[in-house]
Amino acid sequence: MDRVFIFPILPAVFDPLHKIDKPKTFDLQFNAINFCYKSSEPAVLTDFSLQLKSGKKVAVIGPTGSGISSLIQLMLRYRQPESGTITLSGQDLSRYRSEQCHDMIAVVPQHTYLFNSSIRENLLIANPSATQQQLEQACKKAQIHDFILSQPEGYDTWVGETGVKISGGQARRLSVARALLRDFELLILDEPGEGLDAKTEQELIQTLVENIGTKALLLITHSQTGLALMDEVIILEQGICTARGKYQSLIADHGYFKQLFSCDNVQ
Image (tube, rainbow, N blue to C red; front, side, top):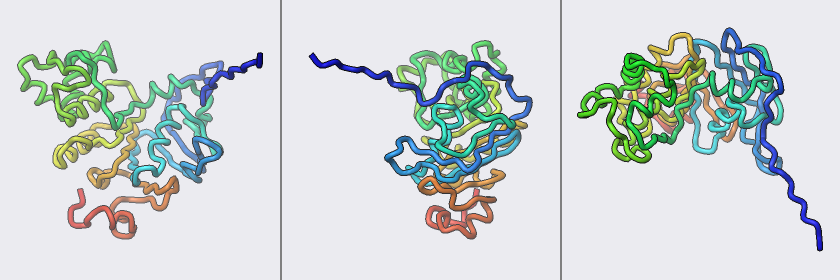
């Protein structure tokens, strides 16, 4: 009888044995990163550089498949680059354990998941010790507080399995509020306008920018909403940065923006 060898599936990233201290200041840098999921496949990111430090607001925009989602996986240490370096406050990111990255980085994902529970309990997942005042502050910033108060049971309103009793836009804003309850250093908004009308999306991003304080913000979007509020806008096409700069300059000069947006309605 032939022997059958079963090889274990190894994790994409290993955590270091020894935990290092959380940095006193947040400064995440991608330096000439090249990344692909399989060596036989084309590169997802090519010679890509990015800096996200305390107080900085950056937007990355590009078509589907341009490599944007891979940035989040690299930041959270789900994956590691083929070449180039990712550093956090001068230390190689690989020196930090995955849970440390997750603690410092709050992500509002493109697809929101809510548990079959109350609004309050869904929010407290992010911070079980949060007070009612903290819940309300987060929900006000996420433009969802007034809706919650309009419900007969307020914060004890049941959302149903996967949030079926509320709209997609309302679930989206609850996801934002949940992220804001965390003690993060970087907030990542992955398509925050999904399910929202243009006015609500603008108000949401405007409020978040005004209240981000010394934290870093990364906006991933296919919309022009909020881009004018960013310190830097990066255009990513097929894993390559084709342009970067202030939105006002890019919309005047770059062909990608001219294809997507009209210059008549800059937000």
